[in-house]
Amino acid sequence: MATVTADADTRPIAPVDVSDAALYTEDRWQEPFAQLRAEMPLAWHPESPYGPYWSVSSHGLIQQVEALPDIYSSDTANGGITIIDPMDEIAQKFENFIAMDRPRHTEQRRVVQPSFNPSEMARREVEIRQRVGELFDVLPVGETFNWVERVSIPITIGMICALFDFPWEERHDLKRWSDWASEVTPDQSEERRMLWLEQMMQMLTRFDRLFEEKRAAPPADDLMSRIIHSDAMGQMPPAERMGNVALLIVGGNDTTRNSMSGFIDAINRYPDQLDKLRADPSLIPNAASEIIRWQSPVTHMRRTALEDTELDGHAIKAGEKLILWYISGNRDEALFADADRFDVTRENARRHIGFGFGIHRCVGARLAELQLQIYIEQIVKRGWRVEPRGDWTRLESCFLHGFTDMPVEIVAEG
Ligand code: HEM
Image (tube, rainbow, N blue to C red; front, side, top):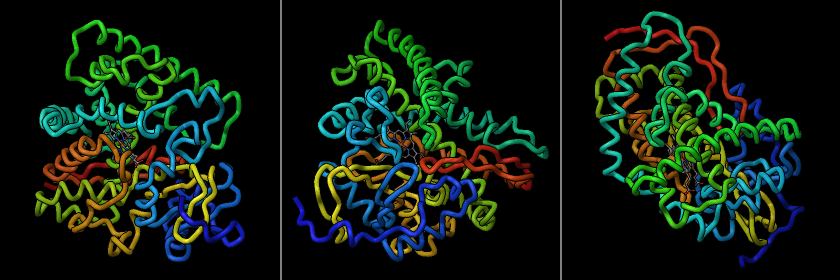
């Protein structure tokens, strides 16, 4: 165990509660985090609607915490992976492998990993390019419409349908379950909990039918078949099946969707960057990394200290929660020059921490990058500008960072 040199009295107290969703809906989170990084990259919040917590806001410290998964736990039983504590024993049973520690995490991750390996991605690329191209072909150029509804959501929901062999006609259910499963709100009322449970039960019932079809068939290469025919995940109790389905649909859905919407925001704030992509499309893969850095669609992950320890000269007590603010680490000037700027030529864009770090680093990272590259490619090759028409609305959340409405018009120039 590390030597503990400081006590609670010497804790640097954060001047602002960065868990306040208004910072994100009103897009004014940049300044509070810049202050935290400069003055106290590890800061204590004695109270918040989610209880007391530590803010970890620099890139370096976030990596340090994630590199020690045996000290800083992800397990639901200890508090899980978001700022909100699992509400009760029922919620704690909805386990999934992002919210597990070793060795179970390793066993389950190993089952799904092959669905995201390079040969699988090469196969997927053809399918994604065709699907995204068809969607862009029918967009109403010259009219006002909601980009999130018409573009970001259908592309990413389409990907999840393909990954799970889920019927396209039922995609609206998938979107609704994904929204419920990813909700992080201080509202912990019984009524809210029952609504949540009802949606999750619906999701489980539908997915169980798909699982049973796969179980009855010989083992195949797709994700559902891999899961149901595996030793580590084939016999999961219902709540854990539900948890893992939710993980895969939320993991692959809202995150990529919000990166896509974020790209439209970025090229409107920095139109010269779209010009650069048009002049040199070989920059598109780097632009995909840069948009994940700049947007940071997952605002935070949480860890809970399993023992008294020390971090950055401060004593952390067993049981305390640490919030790893990726959104801040990705704007850390110590690593990223002129960090608030969206720059498609940024040389170290790939060092962003938007996918996390260490044993839990996003298993779908390559699939997300691939979708983003193909999506950016479509905008670039068509010579489009996508301009705001009306106010954009941001997601009310301190967990996922994105947009709900983006009225826009496509102006074709190319
Ligand atoms: C831009 C898009 C995406 C972003 C920003 C993102 C971000 C993240 C983050 C921050 C983590 C946790 C990392 C940590 O704790 O260190 C994570 C884990 C995970 N992501 Fe993603 N993700 C994206 C796309 C996807 C996709 C497309 C899928 C799959 C369809 C996916 C599935 C998962 C899974 C299963 C985990 C758990 C990994 C583990 O615990 O070992 N993600 N992702």
